[in-house]
Length: 347
Image 1: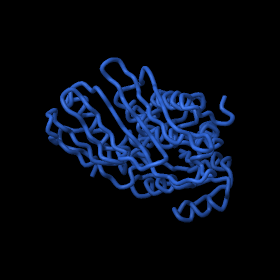
Image 2: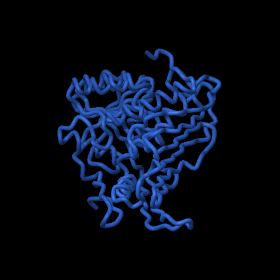
Image 3: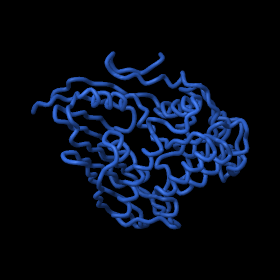
Image 4: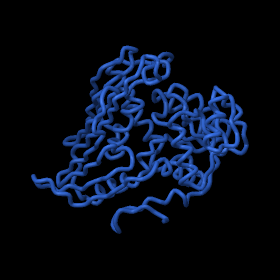
């Protein structure tokens, strides 16, 4: 199969296995890196050839589980490995800037886990380093590259729901975490916004662009990072959007896009491969069209996007541009400011 497509009138998403091969290194052998390594191996023509960690034992264990030939203690050796073309940065948010900048300066293309950094100033530093080194850089917002999102955008572009008026999305997980956990650690840029809130915010901005205003309210954890945040994003009349996130409870993690002539509903979890439904405008809920976008893993689509862009000599992706990442981070920065969270060492 060369593409994933809804119907003949809906957009095709290129088959990830058809993208050019790319040799990857991984920084940070944690849980999300497992999913990345499996996606590269199972669904693309690429290969993970090296992994690095501050803890050599963790790097070796990860390499052994995924059949990766080289494991490094520390990240300088990964940057010096001439066989590595691109690096997936999966370290904590607090280290994204340091690792992405170092890898870019070492001549590696970089895919950096979302949220891209702690704040927009660090985002700018990452992209400046990539620009200076002439390498590709992208935030790993995998949602943007999934088939069901392509279908949603196509339905909107075709006017199937008329003018979009409201977008709403939530992301809540019931996480019973001790105060020492990464998500509660201010020094590691913990909190709900950067881990969970980035998804609904990025979804809203993908469809509506940057808001003209942000109004946020929330609650903090006992360690002083955000536990729950609700955001209203303002746009010129009549458009507005709502995005929320929480570490306290599992929410439906759904999304809805409402227009003057209908709406689009995305099942939970909206940010992964899921079902999108086109609903008619009547008072009685009528499913006009349905697209089943459920896929195994899902990271392969962003991995393939990097490979295609690198092969084409691009510095950024049209689906997740540098300005897209800046815009998302500006919203997260402002929401965090309003709820009263500041990370140690922020400029």
